[in-house]
Image (cartoon, rainbow, N blue to C red; front, side):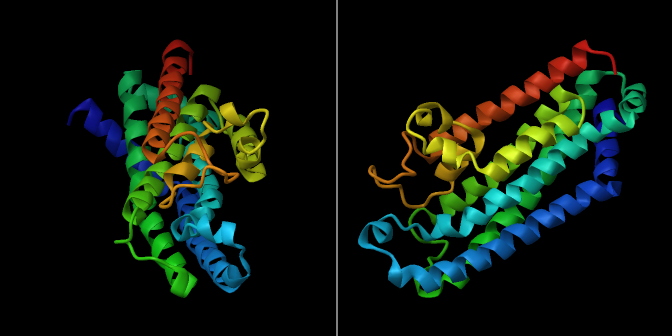
Length: 260
């Protein structure tokens, strides 16, 4: 068996046997789907009270995906725990003894985490879409509606890339406390508020969760809407790929240059 295959198998065992990592993925699914139902029902009941401007800017797909912005916190936690717990537990020394080629070890960990996240992202993303649209009732859309499939696929990509970004940050920080202490409060406090502040909107709109909002849209925001951004969903995907790539490369450089 090659070193790469052995490393991949070892990382898969870690995911399968890690209680905390498994539960965070289950929590992601429950949060996203549950919030999709609640938000859909709430919007369904309040649709008739919306003014003309709000109705013109109404995006039923994005409404269903608002829950993903909370669910992604669990995805971030999964990525941080999967990578950072090796440092906090001291297991990183045993892992590097078993796989002394650090590039192979790091690549196997990133690939295993990304593949796991992508599978759960697809399941969660499509389940969230269908439950939200069912809850919206007459105001919902089908997957064949304009932009719906694209928005759903990009929502799944957003979750996966956010997980990959979190794994890279955890590798840079060499632990769990600092990444969780910074990333989760930022997501909970919602950097959407930063993106809507006139003074810093130009820069803040390119934050990872900001571009995710653009990626999840099926209906472009009106130019006069507060959540309008200067780029479209595919540009948002490119920006998020750059965020994730920068974090992953940074994590590799730290692993390569510092002792375990």
